[in-house]
Image 1: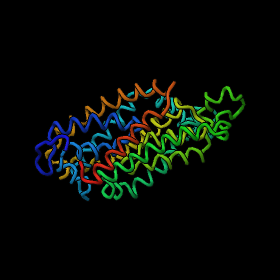
Image 2: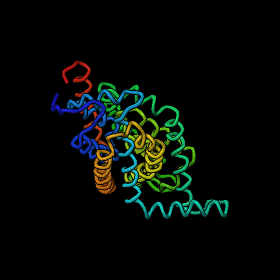
Image 3: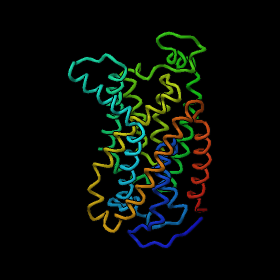
Image 4: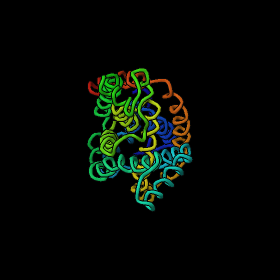
Length: 310
């Protein structure tokens, strides 16, 4: 083990809470899988109480993660609050006039549609998948697969049919890199991107990463694909946290309220800084560096945990 921290069974120290909270806030938005890192980091650091809890049917650690998810979604709301005011206002307008006329009105309904697959599948399978795959070797393998998905998305977006989508509504090959307008996505395309997003139920698969890949393959540029992934993630992460907030106030959260507050505060800060950085980053750059990280980290951890070296 890289580092061992003395811990009491069914308990988290404030140091553990701080480290996991900060990492979760960062990796939720970076295309690196927060759930995968919340499994791998405790295992690498020798936090056996945390590792063993993750696959329990009633897990104090997953109760702790609920607080982190709520904090991350609040950071996204804080960063995009102007966008959400315009988008939600536009959505209410469509309900009043019963038709969609502007790009923001269309974006509202696209965001509603994109959350449906993740919401439904999350309600049905989230707990089962977490307890089944919340193990270091499985998380490492899925992190490696996440790297392949990111790398594959970057390669596939260069194919001619995807570039034609990017020029939808006119334009030339020279304008393909600018991508299509976000509001031109169809409801079916939004639903498909939502299916991509739902694969993040597997520890190691990044919600923002696979959602971005879904957008890239429908002709969006990196900047719009990233923004759409962050907007689409906000209600899903928030709802997932709110639905399980009872775990925090029940027996699973007993003795963890201070740790949850500390971890959540750091998750909020980490997420806010991350989204601010990534929005700027994806104006000119790609998913490739993150794909390489996932391939290396996932591969090394899969071998290490699979063979007992870690």
